[in-house]
Length: 103
Length: 172
Image (tube, rainbow over all chains, first blue to last red; front, top):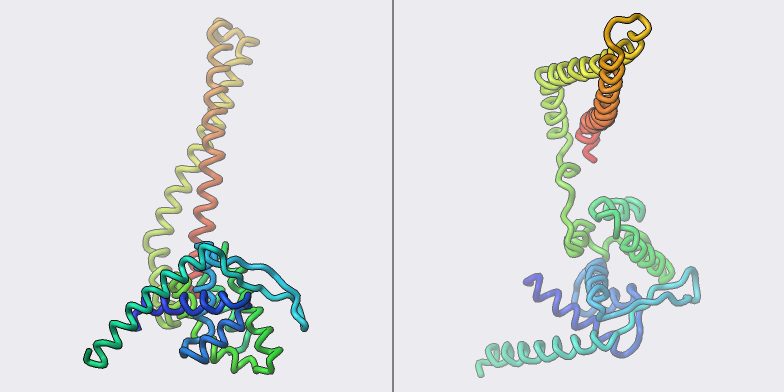
C-alpha cells in the first residue's frame, strides 16, 4: 500500500476511535492490528505526528496495575481533521466501489 | 531479541532529543502487553521491525553502524594506512610549527623584558628601550593568547581524529 495513503487511513482510524473515548496507545494498537492488519509499532509514529499537529493531546492517568498510562484525547482541531479524512474516505470508497462493481 | 535489545536497537536510530519520549511509549506498550499476559516475544513480534518504526518517525538507520564487520575492518585498515603515509607526517609538521610559534612567544617575552631592564645597563636611551620593550611584551601576550586557542583546538582535533578510529572499529 502507498505509504501516504496508509498513513491517512491509520490517522482516520485513530481519530475515529478517539471520538468515542480517550484511549491509551496499546489499546489503539491492538484494535488496529486486529482489524486492519498493521504492526502494533506503526501506531506510535502516527500518534506522535497527530500530537505534533495538535490533533490529539495526551495526559497521564492511573492504571489499575502498575504505573500511569498515557491517554490520548481528540482535540477540536483533530475532530475537524477527522471529518475531512472521513469525507475523503467516503469519496474514495464510493469511487472504488463504482469501478469495482462496474457502475 | 529481548525487550532491552529491541529498545536499544530502536534508540540507536532516533535522535537524542526525542528518543526518551518515544522509548517511554514503547516501554508502556511492553508493560501493558505483559499485564495482558503476552510474552516479550509475542509483543516484539506484533510491534514489528524497529527499522520500519524508525522510518515511520522519519529517521533512517545510521549508515556506519550498518556496515558489516568485514567492511569495518577494511575501513580501519585504510585509515591506518592513511595514518602511516600521510597523517603522521602532517601531524608532525604541524607539531613543529606549533613548537616554533611557542618559541616565538617565549623569545618575544625575553626580548621585551631584556629591552626594559637594559636601562640599568645604559645600552640605549630609556625613551626607546622601555616603550619598545612594552610593545614587544604586548605583542607576545597577543600571540600567546592566540596560541592558547590554537593549542586548544589542535588538541580537540587530535582527540576527534583518534576517536574516529574507535568509532569505525566499533561501528558506532
